[in-house]
Image 1 (cartoon, rainbow, N blue to C red):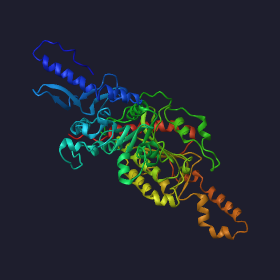
Image 2 (cartoon, rainbow, N blue to C red):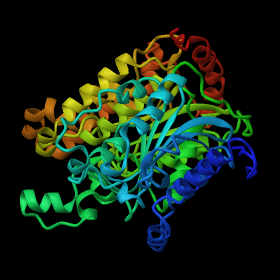
Image 3 (cartoon, rainbow, N blue to C red):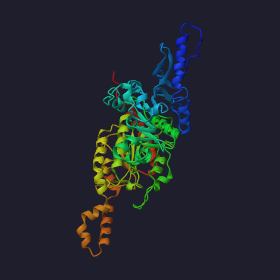
Image 4 (tube, rainbow, N blue to C red):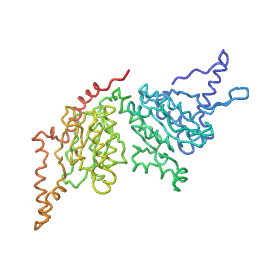
Length: 523
């Protein structure tokens, strides 16, 4: 951002310009030298260093830099200002404009007593009105009882002018946990389309250890309460980062796949990978032995544009992989089952993960490619208590509402209710379904289905094991994907090596559908 030249001491407004420069300098000083030195000693970037690491050079245009608590002499002469701990403005990432809301922990630990809510709410409202992606760099201890001293009483907790839900329906929203994020700080991280937290440094929680200790007599530290290992289980935060720069790089990469708003289309990159590239490894990617597993991520890397796969939610709901990637330069959403985790079955966390990814792609007009190896819903007491069926039902609802062009590649299994969730309404022109020769499908897997249907016959046989094997072999012969292809139940069975070429041809038509079918912006 360009800055005005140094002011001259002479001139009609020299005094005011001098005060302006002084106030700006004090705002840039943040919490002061001592607080900044302490923060640096902890190994963290300060708020303005974070902005510089995230945005294009000199692109940040700060808004409201003069907001804070002014101190004046008895005569009413300005002496100094304590800046608010919210830094807001706009900037650019790879030339694309974004809005930014950054906590400054060096000022009262980013707590509510040192902020002006109108300031951070303003940038969020501006992002909504200008249809700009909004990025929140959160490092806030949350509320403080000292706020009562400032306002002389209590307030009903609400922010009626904060357009949180409107933002989620309109523009990409990103939440980054860079330190302790308690209460409202946690909500700012989680009320997003993509969230990331720094391992060992960030915590996301409803309240910190002091509040928990007082309420529940639990002596627990902040990492055990809201650290990254907790959220591998909770699935609240999408991604983890090894450090702050990694977290900010993930933000940059996530936004590179998305449009500015729902009224725009996502950026298409120049195609640098051969659309007809055929990786010979793919023909043997799926083992013939159904008990053996394989590496689904290697399949993705062989089919999608090289180096383009950006995984979201790696550490939760591991039986399903969700990612963003590119096909011939066009951004797409990717879903795949991972047989290394729960056999690839639909768990409650996997369902939650798939649902939100489908919703993300539908909202922002990303075509979806689904590599299907779905054995069905997770079964057993733990799955029933956990509500797996409700999770699968929510996925069904998301698919029903999905507006994205969709292609499913059935690479191994597709069984039961969860198998039926491999795509939205099949049969529409841009909702395609292909299969590899290794694919099998049905209402129930043969191994379990034979025992359920022929239990008495098997148990009465002289050799139950041999009888069961005989029946399984009989039914397996009927599960050949070619029988389904004969009835046009599948568009085609393809050589796995041709998958990329087929998808790159499809994406050309799918993207034209997206490009011409985005909603019109309201007046």
